[in-house]
Amino acid sequence: MKYRILFCLLGWSLALWAQKEGRVHYVEIVQFKIDLPESEAHLAAQFPTEQKTRKVLIFNEKEALYQNYDPHADTDQVFEQASEDGDVQIKMVFSLPENKTWHNFETGEVVSQQEVFGRKFLISGPQNHAWKLTTEQKIIADFVCTKAILQDTSQHVVAWFTPEIPIAVGPLDYGQLPGLILELDINNGEQKTVATAVEWGRVEPGAIQKPTKGKKVTWAEFEKIVEEKEREMESENGDGIELRIRN
Image (tube, rainbow, N blue to C red; front, side, top):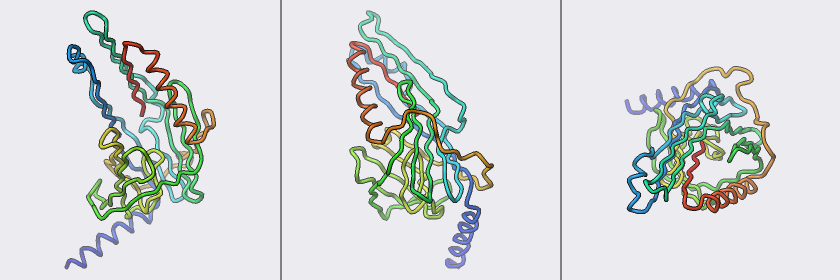
């Protein structure tokens, strides 16, 4: 009986993958913490502690596109607070720019369109992630997933992928695993993306398009630009605090 059930489940997964196209719905959660002097700690309580954003991965057997669930949403939410004497000012900006990442399964090419501090960048180049596979497993969105840990980064990145959907892709620019990434955790929950549902079905022509907007840079150049801009903003803010959260 156990073998029959296992065979049926395997046959069901293979039947689904035979369609080879569909959509994966994700929720992306960014956590943040505001550290203030004890006398002003009450200000932090006036701000949200996380941002949730709906994302979608559209795929077929040749390529995939990871983007906002609503690709036309591009609005900022701003929260501001100041201490009674005005010595401490906090400004928090939630940004939802038109960020998207395209993967080509046949060539391994990855192109990402990212907006940072009002500037658009088109990032491309090889992404050779070195993953360490583990034996840990869990169920995500009704699929059996295996844990993998990224080895070649200063960040702590954990991915849960399912071989039941054999495409080497996932949220953001991550991939190169023997299956679709259904959960991605960066720095122990600072940024976490979890699949909520997998929809099988025909993807309409034109739904997956390679990004074209922005200044062309490599991944290394992009990281350097972001770091320099963040340092510049820190020096300009003085006694104020500005947090800009981008998804």
